[in-house]
Image (cartoon, rainbow, N blue to C red; front, side, top):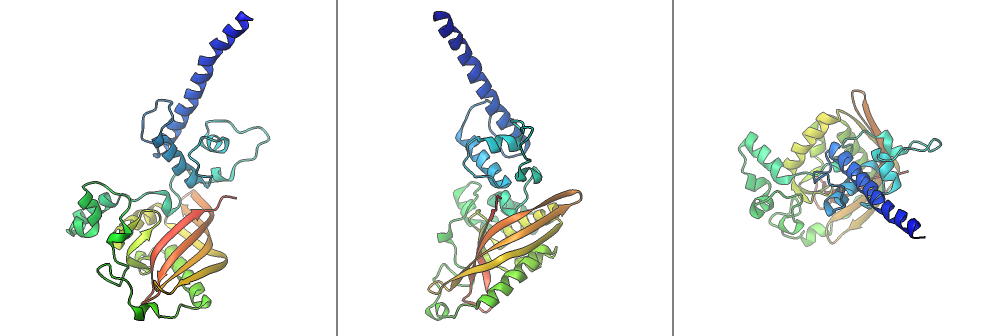
Length: 288
């Protein structure tokens, strides 16, 4: 009996070591993909959890931050079984695919723009400058709705404007998807307001969006998007806005590197002007 207990006690360190090695492998794989920048120490941490969530969102997995079987298999940390089908997420390259896969460093982008144009960094990213640090999000409370100026609310006359018809909105979304499929940057930028709550990066200046899009266009020069199914629209008359939800199929290419899939999208349009602009946009990969 004592010998049996002793054997079990001797096994415990080896089990723990294997566990640490698995975590270390996760850290190494995420580091190789430029997602995790912490220590390769085989220990769970908040930084590792956030890196896992980032990777899971990129691959269309459930973004739990946990090292579940699907995530381990996708990373190559555990082997695929002989009769186990190839997971769909592995069809995507190990690099950012969607625009939302890469967080925008607002201050860094602003400094790059300023260096090339001479425009003040403070005018492009005032919050990041005021905080004295690089920021991934600008507070919506500090910025006006595009076209209203100075943080003021939309006027009563503007909020009384009738919302666009479903047919108009369908055509608007189709025109937007055509614009983002072309390599004419100005076509896409025309749809955005002066400041946009942009793809999880908070409220950013349109010049920062332009700067980041140049990089995205260069990375994925061949792009096509199409609507899947009907759009869903909801008017917010008191704000003079329309919330539009739709699903798209995307196909991206750069030489032999290809990526395709589906995303669920939401845009908020400031419809209180003669030239409606997008003031908020989000996208989420659809995992099938």
